Amino acid sequence: MSTIDKFAGKPLRWNDGAIVHAVQSTQVEGEPMLWTLCDRDVPDGEAIDEDVTVTCPACLRELSVEP
Ligand SMILES: [Zn+2]
Image (cartoon, rainbow, N blue to C red):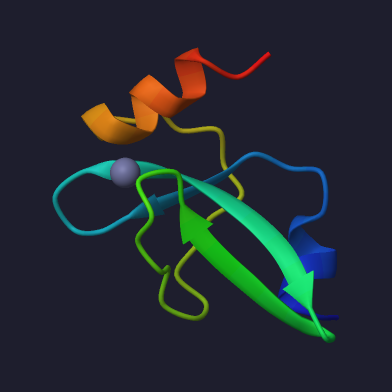
């Protein structure tokens, strides 16, 4: 099962060791791509599919403007 299938439709988070980011995912030519709402690349396998509280200010700002 690919990362993208595993995470399809779930809220994703990434703890970078200091703060928790909100993560977006897509698939490009069959390869999963994960990045934070503040435009950082998420290291392979480090995203989590738990709805933990986002603490990154930039990600929170992006989340707040989503429909
Ligand atoms: Zn962030």
